[in-house]
Amino acid sequence: TRCQVTPAYNAHTTGCDSLVVGVPMVSLLRPVSSLNGEIGTDKMPSRVGGSFLKILDLDELIAPCMASYEDIMVKCATDHKWFTDITERLKVNRRTSPLFDTQRWVRNWELGLLEAVTKEAVSNIYVLEE
Image 1 (cartoon, one colour):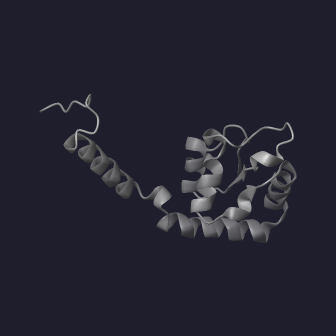
Image 2 (tube, helix red, strand yellow; image 1 turned 90 degrees about the horizontal axis):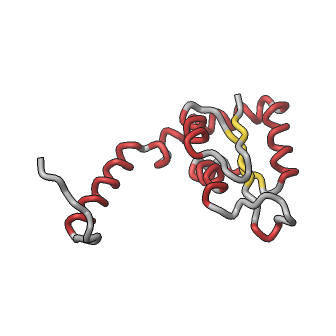
């Protein structure tokens, strides 16, 4: 099973769900200078998939151009050994990746909220007493 993401708006929840269950995905992440009128990937919504793959050390699934994107998809479908190696690496890397460390994320989110309230960083934050 493979997950292919579109260039303009990609990954987000579907990509994260795919990766957490061990399904690799392919993402197109072109430098802005190489667009030549094609779909850009310079905005945040189009860079999510590449960010997920980067943090999981799966850079070979990030394509710099449409031809490479297609080549990677073909390789996923035809090179069983390569694809199995990618899938196994994903399974190993997701165990230690901060991308899937929910406890760490929640702890940092809570600390950020406490800091904002403690420092009164934003004057319109209201804390309701129980």
